[in-house]
Amino acid sequence: MKIGGLRRSAAHRIACAVVAAEVRRLRDGDAARLPALDWPEDMPIGDEGLGLDSIEQLGALGALAETFGLDDDRLGTEPPARVGEWIDWVMAAQHTSDRQIIVATSGSTGAPRLCRHAVADLLDEAAYIAARFADRRRVVAMVPAHHLYGIIWTALLPGVLGIPVVVRTIGAALDLTAGDIVVAVPEQWLALSRIVRRFPDDVVGVSSAGVLDDRVATDLSAKGLARLVDVYGASETSAIAIREIPASTYELLPRWHLAPRDDGDWDLVDSRGARVDLPDRIDRTGDRTLRPIGRRDGAVQVGGHNVWPDRVARILRDTDGVADVAVRLHANGRLKAFIVPVDGRDPADLSATLDRVVADRLTAAERPKSLRFGSSLPRGEMGKLTDWV
Image 1 (cartoon, one colour):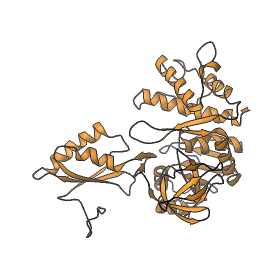
Image 2 (cartoon, helix red, strand yellow; image 1 turned 90 degrees about the horizontal axis):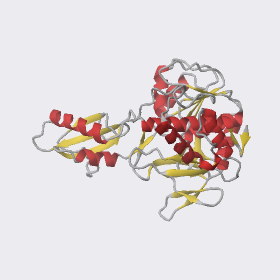
Image 3 (tube, helix red, strand yellow; image 1 turned 90 degrees about the vertical axis):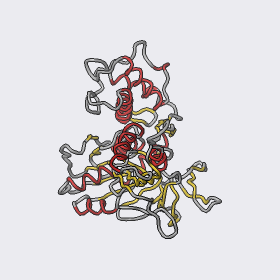
Image 4 (tube, one colour; image 1 turned 45 degrees about the vertical axis):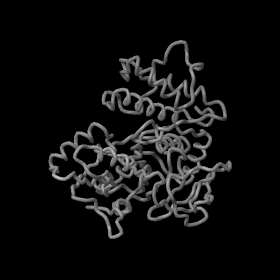
């Protein structure tokens, strides 16, 4: 079934991911009791199926309404009792040309910002991608479909191509086969580069939501991955540009072009002429090619989440016994911290104190996994902060 361009199969996958994320939030991160996605449409929402209590069911309705721009005038006389009734509600609102999908930024601190995207624009993006992957026979999803990357690549794209989606988790058998397109994030690709001895013939990979290390890409290619595509984008823009490994520059999607700023940097301009901030400073390498060279807001990505090292450093610096702190992204994809204790403070004792601060005040993505102690922050000859091992 297709209404307003959004296929029911796509709405189904997105809705399941949205509800799962909401239930996880209500259960303080615990979604272990939920059945594995994607839930069949005849599955009961209550005790006999998903096991959502009345408060969780209300939360699910609210999350779906926010994501798809729904209201209660299209609900029935009784609250939804099965998964398919959620999908009915979503599809009933897809008949107008101005439908939107709303996603939250992946920031790890503060209230996430809501980003609105016209369904028509997202479908155009999926159609462009589909033309580049028309020979694929199955999407293997390792990312959820409530973030924009998952929405495009694991919900809309398979709908355009008319191919099935299977969900896989690293740590279980992948059962990949020729014709698969595997959709994952850089941390997952790193794990796969170590776990998979040899990929089957004709398996294509896609990466986004962070920087893909060139060494990881090389390892994946050496293990038989036929193609690896790196997608540059953001929650605010969706995909901006794509590169085919081993290319180092990204090619803009058709809806975008670059326009110069007064400060010598660049803005995105969409097909309607609207200017949009790029998330990064860029090196413009051609009329339609670019290379990101650093976040404008100082954020880094850890596990697909935006994290601000300066914020983490401020929290650690406020700890009793800490004189100064520097925080950076480690080569392993997690944060690391360099700690300068106040005079006379024992590093071992201070480390235990910092462990409590980290556990109490920082999210999982923000927590430094490596602490190094020294009498002063590492600096070069000109006094600029330098990296440390």
